[in-house]
Length: 324
Picture 1 (tube, rainbow, N blue to C red):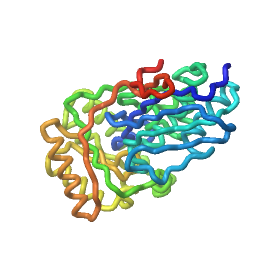
Picture 2 (cartoon, rainbow, N blue to C red; picture 1 turned 60 degrees about the vertical axis):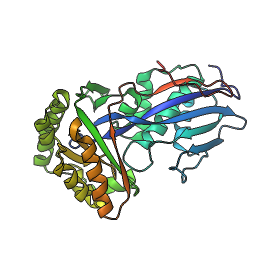
Picture 3 (cartoon, rainbow, N blue to C red; picture 1 turned 90 degrees about the horizontal axis):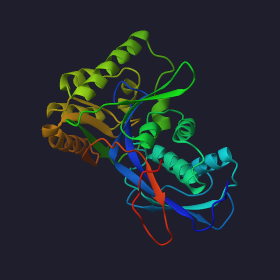
């Protein structure tokens, strides 16, 4: 395996994700038409040097160094293939705001894995990268669609393999994301959950997930409305999101089929028909403002292609292309 040389670089484009989508806790996620762009370049220095440059209004609190998630993910690849770690510089065009429930951490993990693998000639398969991503993140619902794109249902099979099912998302169903200025860490959201749940709640979620997936496939709003209900994580997390319940009610009042916490929050995801999507977004931001929270909304489509990469010649900024 050839060690990357100083000046060698790649650009990796990684989509945002919305996870859980109500009843699909830790197993269902979708890639969205919003993403981060990572330029990774080998620089002088030892295997503990990682320089981070953030472009964009968010992420001023993010830091470089050997503990950065992008770099830790890159080092995981190099250890796997037996290559000595190199120093990296990452220039990130940050469009996915951190700690908002849109998979920002997953974009960092996936970018580090794909970029590091590309820099040493792609010895690891997409399946192996997927396995590493899930291991680093601890759950598959964000990293799988971030890597592969689309709507993904991921399960740990009895064979101990991770099995990914690409599910259909009817284009008539629009994702409306309302993103507040407040932040909520995944660890805090997980601490709010109980260690066990009643069997009746688990059964309810299984049925709701079936209805939701069928509604997303067919575009049937009634099925989506009945499917976007959760008893595993949302009852314990709504109280962590300032004004969240009022925003959900506002979305429903103007025609959303359902409104749920995106990932661990605090961003909220509403599913709506195309002719109501813009109004739903406006209602959500207005309701949040009434609760003393600034926010913005976006009507987003499903991103089907997943993460992409391309070689980054010195001094240029090429468009990313699919890396297979």
